[in-house]
Image (cartoon, rainbow over all chains, first blue to last red; front, side, top):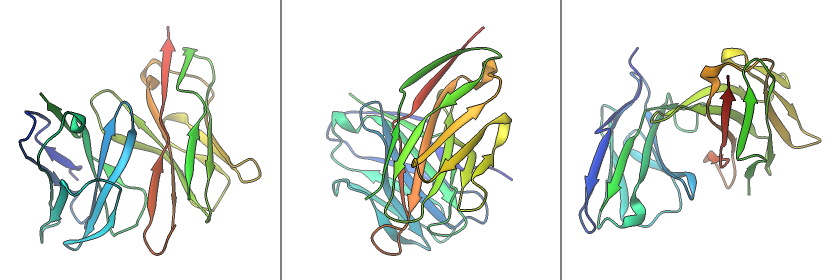
Length: 113
Length: 116
């Protein structure tokens, strides 16, 4: 069974641009969560989607948004990029909302110049 | 509110010696607790989980952890370190705070170095 797949693995953007990251969950998993990992703040929860609906949200500004498609694939969008958005963005999937543990992808490393 | 404190940001051991990574937590509800490992440029891999069954939990790669409610601790141990254990380890707590939504809180991580 394939694991959680995140694309792209690496991305370089400049301030003010926007970016879209993609996550394909494990087959049969319908819940997708997103996390931001930085050296200073560690791992922080962004949001969780289940059945195309946002079920849970962390404490991030509105520039961070996401969506989930009917096939459970999810995208995360960050608009008006700031230098502080440089991070490893991790996606995790689980069979249903709130079910632990989650299975993580290898992440997308986003660098802002 | 829930929180997780990993008491050591860096632990260094020699190959073949025991590993102890310490984690304390606080939670208003009955928590689930997890240890994850992260190798460089990789995602998080689940080592083990505690979900209110046996207090001594065995995980993969010879790791185990003991849930001690009286001490609010969930320390990770391994009898004999291997070079491949060198990685960053995260203690994670999950409870049902504030309604029906589960919330995951991560510790800051402990970097384990294994010396030959």
